Image 1: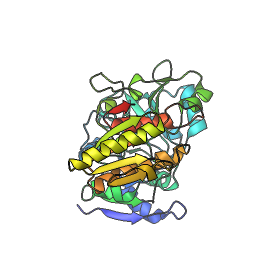
Image 2: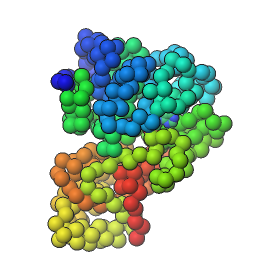
Image 3: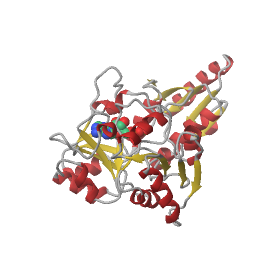
Image 4: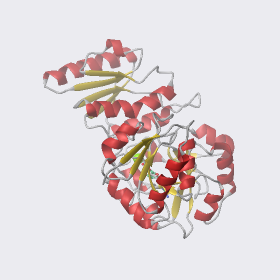
Length: 353
Ligand code: AMP
Ligand code: MG
């Protein structure tokens, strides 16, 4: 299959082209598109066969459910059994935006889309191209991140093309995404709302709207081996090809430790990459040294993380060391989301010194 790549700016939407993209979706095909979090791989959420194609294009296990993207609030009502007050409050506060809400699904949503679950994950993205594309496609787009299963999510269309070229009908290139980490997922089907995946919308932000909110234990722990609440949690995620280790502790010691290990690995013939910050990168010695930005600027770290991991892949780096980032969200930060992704990318290989 030839994959058509088209460029489209948020400020200059080509509605005619989006009609063509929408026609592909309506005919059961797949189109990758930009959102404010990461690129999505879209298919018709109400068509079983489209969901099957998404799983195949990604190489994703079919019990790992997809998120249904909508562009109007009314759409939520037809795909769930009941809309609880909490869902309305969250939609009002955070949609369009990087928040996914889980509710009990209606019969309209095929099990192929929800990975066999009776619940459905729903999000309204905050991206003009995404919203217009969903509208042109009939209003219900199932979309996981547009990467091969297991790899870091794409923050640029060129990474979508690397993974999806020849496998899908179209890629809409909207430039670099704004946030760079997947949406926060909150489950509203239990008595107390539960965060299944941390993201840009933090626990504190949700609590301001809902009152008490819990965080699933699997968010920062190694959950492989346990039966997870969200099926997707058990799979390896976001991983670069090189073996990634996170070194946590006092900054000076961390720099020394990473440099020692990097030197040893290079002697053994490994190609070594390091993730530091603006304060530390000049202190490192390795084959490829990248800065996540200023340590205080969590948004920049979030935006850069997957790109750095993808660049290490492009450079054939075989061993990677990363500094740890602050998980406490004292300033309502997204440090927890950043560490959640970094820990998964490292297969939970973290050492404190
Ligand atoms: P991705 O599409 O790659 O951003 O991942 C979507 C993730 O959303 C899955 O891996 C699940 O963890 C989660 N998810 C989607 N639907 C549900 C659901 N019905 N219940 C629980 N988690 C869900
Ligand atoms: Mg993903």
